[in-house]
Image (cartoon, helix red, strand yellow):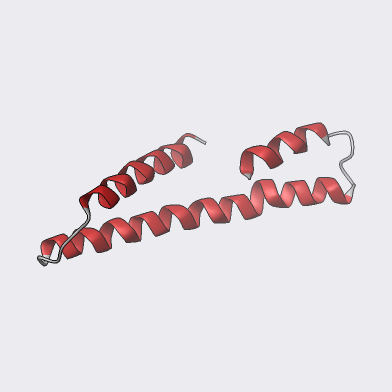
Length: 82
C-alpha cells in the first residue's frame, strides 16, 4: 500500500490541491504507516507469547516461531532503513 500510494503520489505532483492527491497522501503517509507499525507490534506479541509458552513447557510450533522471527527482522529492518 505504501509503495503504491507513493508511486501514484509522484505522478500527481502537478495536482497538489485535488482530492486524488489528498487521498493518495492519506494512504501513503497515514494509513500504510499505521498498518505497518501494527504489524510489527503484532509480530512482537506473537514472538513473546510463543517464547513464553516455550519457557513454561507448553508445546510450541517452532516453524511458526521461526517464520515470525524472520518476518519481524525484515519488518524491523525496513522500518529502520526507511
